[in-house]
Length: 86
Image 1 (spheres, rainbow, N blue to C red):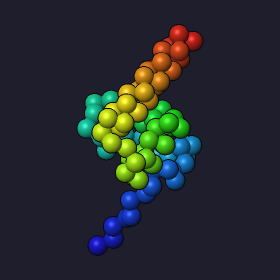
Image 2 (image 1 turned 180 degrees about the vertical axis):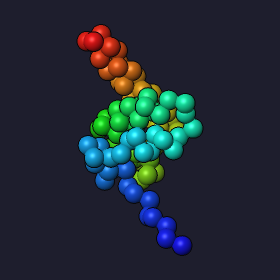
Image 3 (image 1 turned 45 degrees about the vertical axis):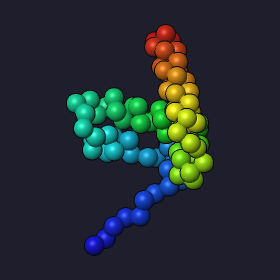
Image 4 (image 1 turned 90 degrees about the vertical axis):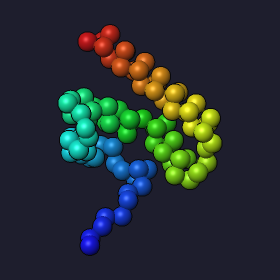
């Protein structure tokens, strides 16, 4: 059996990552939107740092919840700005 080792998300290059291929594997009726969301997450330095902290076991549940909420609010604000610019 040829299993691929799990890749460290901190080592993923957000510029060359195939978001469409990953989104196509998700249970969604809108893979294009999922790909856009994945790209926004992976290009967010705070999200990438959070992934590293999770992998290292550095956060308790409350800290994880606070960090995830902060990133979600930041991404939502950025989307609103982009919509306003269009």
